[in-house]
Amino acid sequence: MSKPFAKTESVCPVCLKKIEAQRTLGDDGFIHLEKSCPEHGCFDTLIWEGGIASYLNWDRGSAGREFPEGAREIEKGCPYDCGLCAAHEREGCCVLLELTSRCNLRCPVCFASAGEGEGKDLSLSEIASLYDMLMERGGPYNIQLSGGEPTVRDDLPEIIDMGRSKGFSFFQMNSNGLRIAGQEGYALELAQAGASCVFLQFDSLDDEAYRMLRGRPLAELKLRAIENCGKSGLPVVLTPTVAPGVNEGELGEILSFALSKAPAVRGVHFQPISYFGRCSLEPPKIRLTLPKMLRLIEEQTGGLMKAADFSGGGAESPYCSFHASYRRLDEGFLKALPRRENACCCQTSFEARDFVSRQWGLKPPENPEAELSETASLDEFLKDAVENTFTVSGMLFQDAWNLDLERLRRCYICEADLERGMVPFCAYNLTDIDGRALYRP
Image 1 (tube, one colour):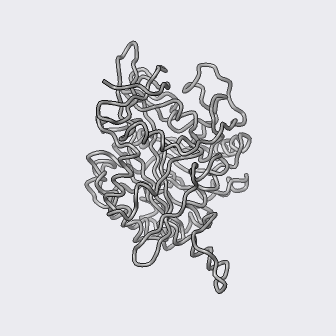
Image 2 (cartoon, one colour):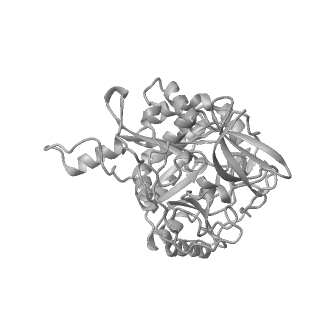
Image 3 (cartoon, one colour):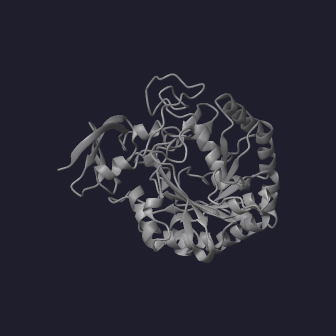
């Protein structure tokens, strides 16, 4: 018999109606989200591999509420009035601009269901309107140029230049890397245009995982994309989608590979799979949770990276993410950089924007672990601090089964939408059991 210990709200995975939910301690000793829809029955989803004390202690100090500029009035309530609505508790940090629905892959798992039909590109005037809207609503935000696959467009330099002219300074490319790998000089073109980094879809070093998650072998192309970015000075963040039974046993191998490619590779950002959009995989009974991800990282790196090195979010809900930064030392050793006590890396959306740009771009860390010596120049010191800092993080997005509206109201990763404004990522991509979307067109 499970034991409830906290109430919240969620949605029914079948009809997406808002329903009451409870966090419970299950018979397995782990934390579950339990909910019941009057029409479609009961749902029980594992959300934390640990007990109540472990779950509560992960929140080392949450920030107070922020009030988003230009918030929409509350009519139907969360999650139906996003854009952002007046009940939302964060102003935003990273904003996705989906420049196109076209893609040069058709992955069996894709939150955007990209690559279907003829596809559509946003016009430059529509992109300009999105930039203006974001500035009016509290910008400049960190911009994620996404899709679809953004590199299928030939005008990315113009899009970045337009954004810079409007006051934005951080441009992350979310890419599968096919064009970066295949077109000589393209990575340099992106770097010269002002791209800050590439979040490279990187699920494995083995083609079998790519066949399952992306529909074709891609391992060699991924290596070539990293090489081209490295030669061009364009920072890379490896971004694996981690799926149970597919590649959860490869976290250590991916981290070891990433370290071998530093400083061209600045870190790894894991994304345990969420079951929304186009997803050929069924939600398993035992899901990947934050504690399990950290345990697997420690086990598979032989203790080089320890679960105790990591902390949860501060500006966003701590139950959405994990991160740790390391100083690379000689002979393959790492030193975990200190984290703030009773808090995470950042407590406000503005702090989060700066942290992200330092974490993944070309800025030096705010408080590098090394100290400037009397004989070293400032330029040498900052270059060393950038090149020898390595970050490991992860983001556990929510779907209709594990959606917790308390977490959603803390979301600071948004989708820019011409009609609605800034919609939290997990609301925008939420789909029911049959793939019908709550927001996405």
